[in-house]
Each structure stands twice: as C-alpha cells, then as structure tokens.
Length: 248
Image 1 (cartoon, rainbow, N blue to C red):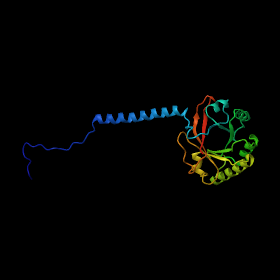
Image 2 (cartoon, helix red, strand yellow; image 1 turned 90 degrees about the horizontal axis):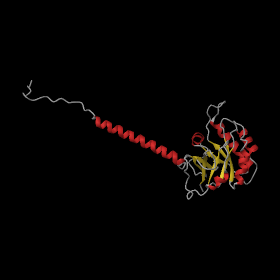
Image 3 (cartoon, one colour; image 1 turned 180 degrees about the vertical axis):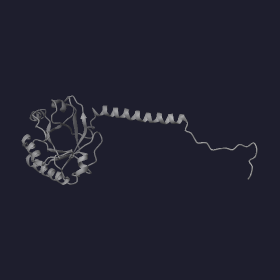
Image 4 (cartoon, rainbow, N blue to C red; image 1 turned 90 degrees about the vertical axis):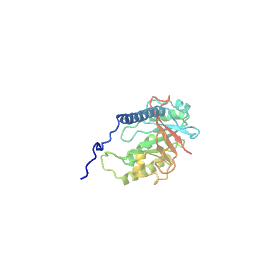
C-alpha cells in the first residue's frame, strides 16, 4: 500500500451551502411578484367600475337591469350612452317583481328600446317559465327580441335532472316564448351552462355571451350581444348595472 507523501493534506468534499443572501433575494422577488399582482387586481377592480367598450368598436350599447333593482333613472341611462335596455323577469322560484311594469313604462318613456330577459331554472320544467313570461310580458311588436338566460346549471335539485331533459325543456321554452313574442329568442349563454350542454352548436339562435372586459369565445361561433361589464357603476342607479354591447 502506497504511503501518502508527508506534508500533504487530504482534501475532503464539503456539502454546498446556499448563501443567506441568495435566499433573501429570492424571498424579496417573490414578495414583489405578489405585491404587483395585488396592485394590478386592485387597479382592475377600480377600473372595471367605470369601464365600457369603445363606442368606435361597438356603436350600439345598452344595459341589463336585474329583477328587484332599486329605482332606475332611465333618462340618465340614455344620457350616458345606452340605446336599449333589457329588463330581467324574476325567476320562477320566487314571486313576480311588482315593479316590472313600472320599469317597462319608464324605460319606454325615456326613449329606450326595451327587451325582456327570462332566467331559466334548470331544476324546473318549461311550462312555469313560459307562464311567467306570457303573464308579465305584453304582446308588443315594438319590444326587442326576448332573451332566455341559460346561466345556472342544476345543483341540488329536488328531483334528479338529466342532461337530455334540460336540453329538451330549453327547446320547449324557446318555442313557447317565440310563440308569444312573435320573434326569435336570443340565448344568453353562461360559459358553465354552455360547457355542460353545448347548446350554441345545436340551436340556430342569436347568442348573448358573458365575460367581463375580454371578448368571449366559449360558444365557438359569433355572438350578437356581449355583457362586457357585469358591475358598471353609473349615476342612473344606486346599484351597478350590467353593460351590454351589440356586435354587427
């Protein structure tokens, strides 16, 4: 066995250690990223309170007034750029909105074009929906095409609901609403509802899609109406309104 020369020390490998300064810099970088995300989210939230798509791109703009809303000054709504308004009926699981008729007349008096939105409850059959619509909405050729809001997906229904039955009830409801209004219905499709039932490709009706700020693409085909800001704050109402634009 060879002897180690005298005076030479054996070098041993030492485990590498991260410098404390590097760890601190990584932590600081992560903190800056989080802070930037918080600042951006806060700016976006504030900006969305007043943001509307450019009129140069979408000359026709209007609003959706939710059922149960407080007093709405429709003259003010028109003054800030609305050319039309859709009024939402109360859902069939609750009582009719007693102020619906007054809103309809006030919107017309302000010179706005008016349409009606009927929310669809997938836990209920078509008949109670159409009964609510025919009872509350007059036969009037001056009204805009009616819209059926297909947004909610069935959750905790009293009875089991099958996908095929929901699709069938929607088709029945569309026919009933169109029979009363005399105009083709518009399908206001939420992304979750469309993902589950894929109605955009099955029904040849104009679409109304929903997505704050960014143009919606989830239907897979062109749309007519776009809810571009679901929480627009205006001088027309103490509550935010849903701002809608038309694509031609």
